[in-house]
Image (cartoon, rainbow over the protein chains, first blue to last red):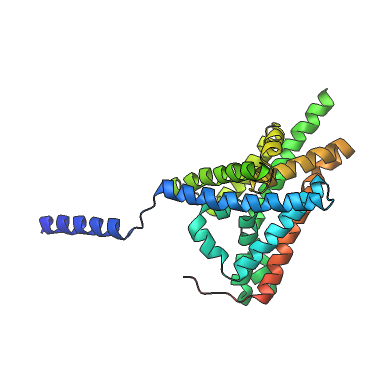
Length: 152
Length: 118
């Protein structure tokens, strides 16, 4: 009886090992590198084009985020971004397009739950923490800068 | 040349984050928060500016660039109008990105229907 249990446990372990998808870290990293790199190249292209059309550095940066965010939301709505994310992993998560995706995806997903508690709440599921901690950390660091400036 | 720099720097940041994604139990949301805070800290230590000068979009398109934008906004506003700037600069500098994501995201929820997960 005890022996049979052991055999079963071993069988089960083997089964779990077989069905768990194997992640090859180097391959995933290469994919993330490729996809993330290409998104940044697209960003650089928008920056250069905007500057060539007479925008200053700050405006060009705004155009760059604006267009990348628009494209990302569009691809999310057309269900293409999830496929890209499956291939690119962190390559689609790290750029600003990943942020836009995390805003648009829950908004589309939860529209059935209503304008306020569906779209309105869920749109901030990931954007909320990102904006909150971004604002608070930059405020705290700014406070240090402020104090150091008075010191001098 | 700026395309090559943007490609390999942006790609490298993504590849490093892929290690975090695969080897730790950090969820995407936590990773994004981490990236933005890291960007703000790097920016405060004045590491980010020369880096962004070199890599262009490779440094500004990833989310750590968002943290950099927030801190620079706060810093510029503090230079401009003192303590009040602490509460003004961050969101002002990042307004385009946040507004664009929210507005386009909302419009997308009106246009597109939810899809089945594969």
